[in-house]
Length: 180
Image (cartoon, rainbow, N blue to C red):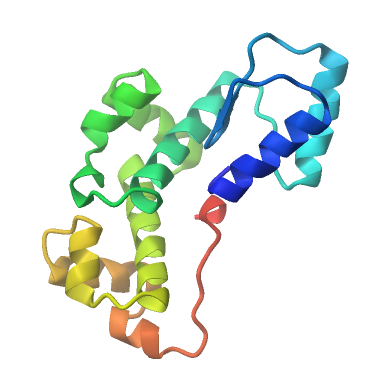
């Protein structure tokens, strides 16, 4: 789940199947008690119809939790100071040391947590360039880059275009957050 509409879709699926839940947040549904296996299969099927996957293994759940923390950090809050403080925020929110999370993520995903953060920041930058009135300096500040030059270099490295060339491009290509 990568957006508020995703959360609503999961809540709707749970309600449709009469499954009690106390809270749904990005990547996680909190149930007051375990559900029986047949209902779990029904939930799995219902979620797949919505384009979601039910993660039952602990490794997959932890990877999703890390990704959702980073997505929340980059896309759903407005405090630039909080973007990129992975060493502080991830251990608090994921319940493991940063070195463990970093190694675990790299082994399973094939990229570092930092690279995943950069990819998310570039997707957010594409959105801000496309849909807002912010200039490159303001975007680099909002995404907690040290300078607009650093932001522009990183943007070009990832997309192959400078931010201004990206805006001029007729084929603006953004990725869904779950595909980054």
